[in-house]
Image: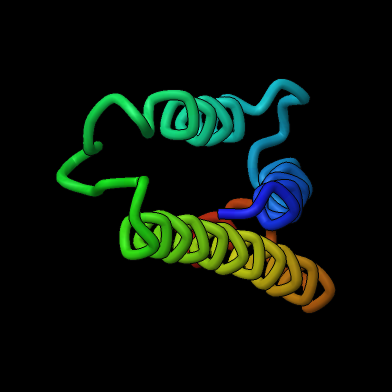
Length: 105
């Protein structure tokens, strides 16, 4: 995977992880970065989970997995925003915080 693509994925994930995980030092982001660095540093030693990163097929499988991970994060962020919008609408209609919590789980 070209360095530029990794930089874009890293930026996207950092930006969206910040909206999902409130702490500044995002453990999920750190784990993701560590995994990418590990794969890059060890690609010439041996296959990882049966994926040979020296081949285009292997690189594409990792790229697809990272893209899927980013899509999951987008979905989580969208869900978090949707729930907050619903919470605000329920509050506008006069529901108590206890009732809102009960309805949203």
